[in-house]
Amino acid sequence: MTALRYVYAVCRPLGAPLQAQLTGVAGAPARQLEHHGLIAVLSLVPEEDFAEAPLKAHLEDLDWLTDTARAHQNVIDALTGLTTPLPLRLGTVFRDDSGVRVMLEAREREFRHAMERLEGRVEWGVKVYAEESEADEDEKGREYGAKAGPAAPTGAVSGRDYLRQRRSRTRAHEETWQQAEGFARRLHDMLSAQAEDSRLHAPQSATLSGASGRNVLNAAYLVPRSRSEEFVELVDRVEDDSPGVRVELTGPWAAYSFTGLTEGTEGAA
Image (cartoon, rainbow, N blue to C red; front, side, top):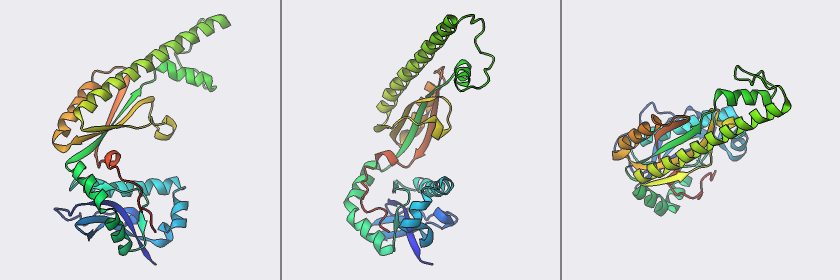
């Protein structure tokens, strides 16, 4: 069976060895390949699963994709504790070590520039959700034919009364969303002032994320490691003083949103 090279990230030479038990994609151990003072962290993976055609098919399999993404992230997280890695795209595969070295040499200037800019920095993710009230949930249930909960309207003796109550609920719902969006804008401005850089991402779909409420802010912030504790405390203070919204903080991550890397020759196998 031919082994391909699955590359997770590029970084400077590590000051400490990778954990001996660190495994990545396909349960394969992570190892280092050095070229011109750059390190590619990779695993040997089977061609039967990671050549172009089978890999494309696997990427349509949600369970396989979830397991692979988790293993990929496991290696990135381990690297983030040791250095400032530049994560490569999920499914970046090369035929052999020579292919990896060609990639490192072709993109050496780009990698070094990104490393200098991101050294000692991590990414924090912040999401804000407008929480839905029990009445909102009951309204959804009625719209989709579900059994109405205890907040179902009573005393609606006519169609006119029902429409009036419905309009009132809609206005209250819209006001809640507007207040949450205003809070999210203020929070983003506050956090951006504490970070070196920030990125606004598209709001996540509740259907895909499984999170409750409406996502009104999905942002990433580039923060020096030395100031991360202060950044986290700021988010915690704001979250404690924000009725009607839910703030979620994740990280610290490798600086995915700020590498500025192009597609280049990734996926060359």
